[in-house]
Amino acid sequence: MAKKGNRILLLLECTACKARNYISEKNKVNTPDKITELNKFCTKCKKHTPHKEQTRLK
Image (cartoon, rainbow, N blue to C red; front, side, top):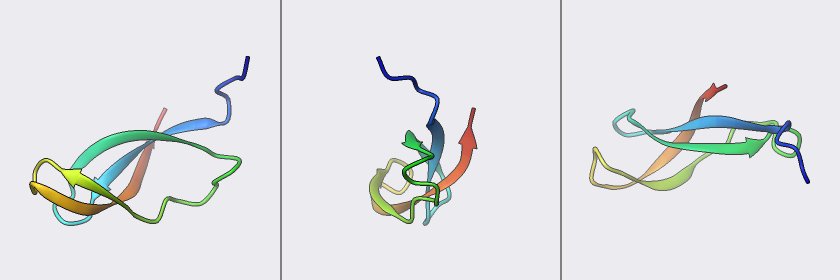
């Protein structure tokens, strides 16, 4: 069974209103750079907006 040692948690923040809406995880070995942009639905703006990677969780 695979270990979760290389996976880290991160927050996705709306670029329009700066609300942190989503928690996701990524593999730090395969994608060491920050996620550029993902279009997600912002519950505060009530529309689809680009979200960027913010501070990482432990």
